[in-house]
Structures are given as C-alpha cells and as structure tokens.
Length: 290
Length: 133
Image 1: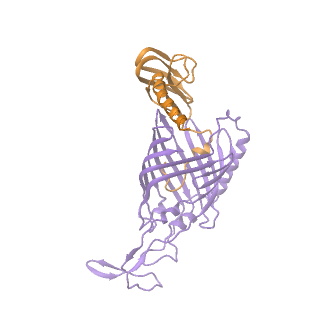
Image 2: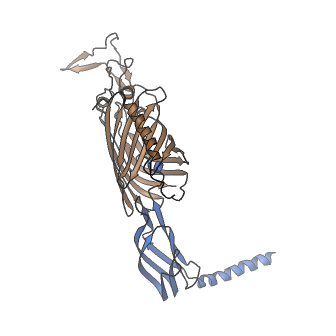
Image 3: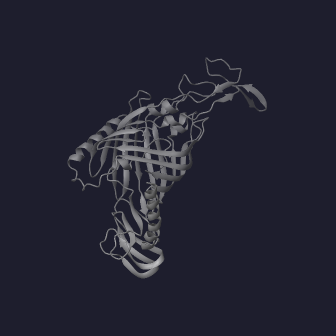
C-alpha cells in the first residue's frame, strides 16, 4: 500500500493525454446556461477547528472562512489556486492548476517547549544518551518542531460530474524546488438536495511521493537531536471522508455544518514529528454569499 | 419665498392623509420564499401559504408577476388566505392590488437559488487548510 510504480507520473501524463484525445470524440456541448458572475465572494462566521497532527502544535481554530474566487472564460482563481481550463467538455473539464501545498500550514502553529535533558527511570534521574557525535546537553533547551517551507505545485485536475455525483482526479508536482515530490488523488462526492436542505458526503484517496512526505514529515539528519530521532518518511496512501450540509435560509444566507476526517499515510503517522495519525476538522456557522 | 415654502409644507401635510386613504396599508406574508434548485432539476414544485391583511375592507386581487391574470380576487375583504401550488423556475413576485390596477399595495418576492453550476470549476473543492465549507 505504501509504494507505487516509479513511472506513476508517466501514467498520470497518459491519463491527461487520454482526456485530450477523448475530447475530440466527445458529444456536442449542452445548451448554454445563463451567464454567471465572474466573482464568487462569501464569508462564513461560526466556530470550528482543525486538529494539527504535528507535535507541539495547536489546533487551528476556524472562526471565519472566506471564499474568494474569480472565474473567467478559461483562467480562474479559487481561494489561492490559479488555474486554466485546458478543456471543457460535456463529460469532463481538464484544468491546469498552480497551488500551494497544504502540508506546510500545519507548521505555522507550533510551540516552543523547554526540555530538561534528564528523565526519571525507576525513581532515579538519569541522563539521556545523545546521538553519536553530539555533546550531552546539561541545561534546559528550547525545542520546537523544525521549519518547513511552502511549496508551489503545478499539475492537472479533471473534474467529472453527473447524476451519480462529482469526481476529481488530480496530479501535482512541486515546481518550486521545495520538496521535488508529487501527489496524485481521487475525490468523490454526492450532493443530495431536498427543499432547502443539502447534504454532501465525500470520500477521497491520495498518494504522496516519498520526497513530499519526507520533506514535510521526516526528521532530516541536520535536525536530529537527543529528543528527535532521524526519520525518513516513505511514499504512501492516505484517505479522507467528510460531510457538508447546508440549510438555505435566504438566497444569500445559509446555515452550514461540516466535518472532515483525514487519515494520514502510515509512514507519515509513524514520524516522530506526528502526534496523531489523523486530522479532524469541523465547522458550524452561518455563511453569506455575496 | 417663505410663504411659498409654508404653502408647500401645508399642501404636503394635507395631501398625505388622502394618499394613505387611497391605498390603505396592506400586509402580506408568503411561505416559503426560496426555491433551491440543484443538478438534475430545473424547477421546484412549491406549495405557497399566502396570507394578507388590510386595515380597511376593499376589493383586492392577488397577482403573480409571471402571469397576466390575477390568481384570486376578494371582494370587500379585510384579510385573505390562499394555498397555491406552483412550479417555480424563475424569481417572481406575489403582489396584492386593486382589480385591474398596477399599484403593488403589498408584494413578496420568491427567489430561486441554483446551487449547481454549468461551470464545473465552480464546484471544485477549495483547498486551503482552513476551508471547511
């Protein structure tokens, strides 16, 4: 489950090209819908949080959720993602997208802890054994999780939808030289709307390369110390599931409730930088769409 | 000049009760007010509970802005109620007026919200870590 063939990116490229090829034989376009506004602006106020799997970190509170998006004929900006619709066909839409990796966000809310390098064993105070080549610390030391940089990733996503729901297939590769890794994933969701109420369960699975996982969740040789053993995260699969529900009060206002559970890849969960093998997010509040 | 201003104020003061008498305050309430349309549907079948009340009895007609003929008229009534089933695919207004009149003594708008989009990009999940909606 942790490894994939080395030519996975080639397969993804093939899939993107297959989409291009299929476009030529696709059915004619559906009748045009009334034009929609370019901008989509919204704000949600309420309470929620997202757990942080990183050691010595705090949960990420969610009190305000902004939705800022702009959709042109081909270009679009969607809450930080910049995209270009390469193909838009009745059966699917293929987008080229540049985005910022989200793993980095967990490294923003970290704490410094002060650690005394002594521990109690059977009632006696003993010294910890330092890694080879390093000095035994004698004083209380400041420790905080290592720094990680944002990565800009570029890739393709294909959006499908129908009576059966909606699905996304995506593949992204680092283009900023931060981790040099890649991620591929598939998401599915189904929205059921009855009167003013809608509920949308979703599931997804993603594969992250060793380079990506190891950059964010590994303990690199120069970071290893007496409390943090060197660790190399491997490639692997993670999955997530969620439920979003809305009750539309007016055309612009809705009550929103959502919950999302993400299971980290095994190799990430085993990292000494990780205290929980999952990320749980929830939010309840009111959302206004302008 | 001062006399002109005083005359204008007096004219307005005297004219106001007359205007109020011509169009007695009428209140109208309609439930529900929102049709939510999702993928695979182009309209809602809605059952409207329409209630209105006036301070003075008169002849009133309930109109639907999408239809040329009144939905129903009441003769010398102080209030009225109606259950009206209707297919809704576009925004429209229920309004109350005098028979054959065009003045809206009271009106209530029924909105249509399309939660799906013909543009799939608008349906993509936003990705920033705080996004929960």
